[in-house]
Image (cartoon, rainbow, N blue to C red):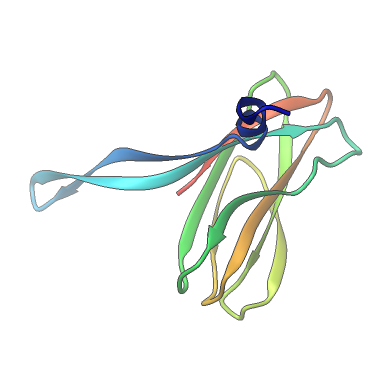
Length: 126
């Protein structure tokens, strides 16, 4: 496997995106770091492999995970992470969710399942 196809299989990129916030009648622009990921959702009843979308190395954080199918089908997902009690939890995921992680070194992982036909999934974690 060459280096380019290896990178395409991982499909995780860091991006800086402007975020505008109104504050006291004026608009401020902040840069927000987010990770972009792509993964495959096989048709139900199968689940795709778990994919690490972020490795957390700092204290408690709040993250928002958003995704959408690239094809014309419904996709559901699951996310695992270390919560505020430093326990690994698995939760259902549908289009967007916010998670609160604990003060630990851990991975945030997702996997997906398509309802009718398999499809690629594109998402972000901010």
